[in-house]
Image 1 (cartoon, one colour):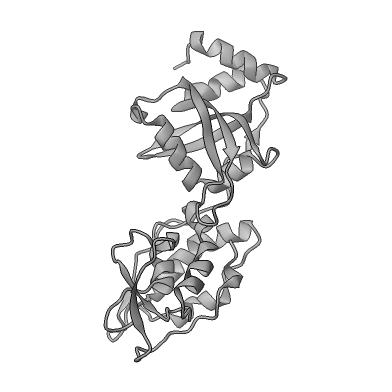
Image 2 (tube, one colour; image 1 turned 135 degrees about the vertical axis):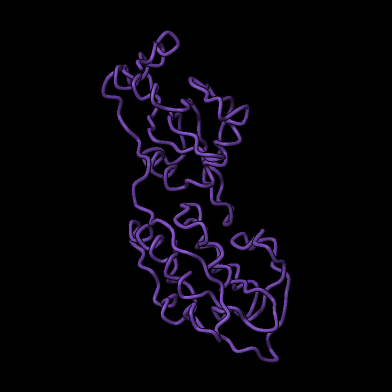
Length: 272
């Protein structure tokens, strides 16, 4: 995330130089947001599509971290404002809600909430004359995420398997950087599923691919020691359409506890 590369915020008045243009396909930040045309210059002062696209890419990792369900709406109201007879800025409450949830995540990686997105500059929701994009408050996010762990004992691993909705052995391979795609790794070859939740149906691979896109921070933590990828055993929970990885282990033959637990799992009976 590189928010400080953005241009100073300018709330443009509607004037003759403003124009409507289609939201380009390569502006990944603002695809499928409910409208197809945007105004230029936008509310961040970008006068060309190339400029807006380039600056928007730096926010994709924050969206992948899912710090706020309306972070995309907030950012797109600035990068790609809807094409109406006037500019519609985000309401102050929307800015504050996104800031309060996402700023702690940005701080985890050393980036402050940028001054150019100061919420005080946006209209308050209660002002009758203001027309803006608003949202209600949501719970705040935190810095906690999955980490690569060491298997301390066979019993501990088997207990974790019992508490998990799924247990999968998978191999990740680093992708060539596309500049737009959030995921940096892809799944390689066949998955080895040790435990399969009925909630997943036959969609475990598709759900894992979605996890690679949405939980970029978790994947980064797992692969920190193996930047080109590797083989991992991951366990976690099923939450609706989403997989949440709770525990991850690097798979290698020297980890006797992990090897033994994997061999014993088929015959293991979970307590309670």
